[in-house]
Length: 155
Image 1 (cartoon, one colour):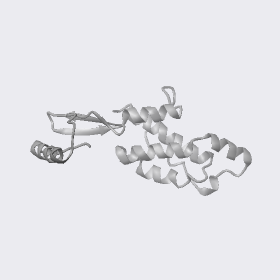
Image 2 (cartoon, helix red, strand yellow; image 1 turned 45 degrees about the vertical axis):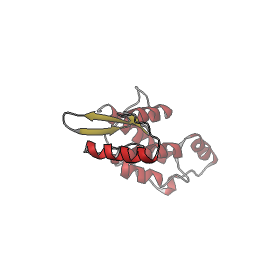
Image 3 (tube, helix red, strand yellow; image 1 turned 60 degrees about the vertical axis):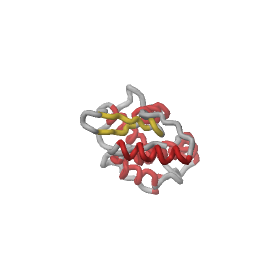
Image 4 (cartoon, helix red, strand yellow; image 1 turned 30 degrees about the vertical axis):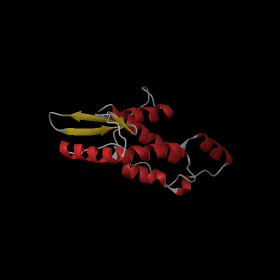
C-alpha cells in the first residue's frame, strides 16, 4: 500500500490505525510503484511521477531505438484513420498478425492513464481499430511511439 498526504500526522495516524489491525512493514520512502518513478523536490514541496523506465522498455519492444526518428506531436494531421483501412487481402492480414497492435495500444493506454494525459485523444483514436487494424493504423501507432521517444528526451 502506498500512502501519501500533505500532512505527516495524517500518515502517522493511518499507519498506527493499520498496525493495530494488521501486521505491517514500513518501507519508508518509495521510489518506484507500478512502473512509475516517484521524484520528490522537498525544497519546493513537489512530487512528480514519471514512467521513463517503462516507456523505454515499450520503445525497445517495438524497435524504436536511438537512430529512429522522433516527432513533436502525438499524431500528425495527415493521419485520417478509418475502418476501411483494415486489411482486405490475405497478405495484408498476415502482415498485420506479425504486428503487435493490441499490445502497443495497451502499453500506450497504461502510460496515458498513469502519467501521460497528452496521449488521451490519440489512444482513443487508435484503440477504435484494435479488432481489425491495417497498415495505416499501425503507422499511426508508430508515430505515437516516435512522439514518446521525442518527449522522453525532454525529461
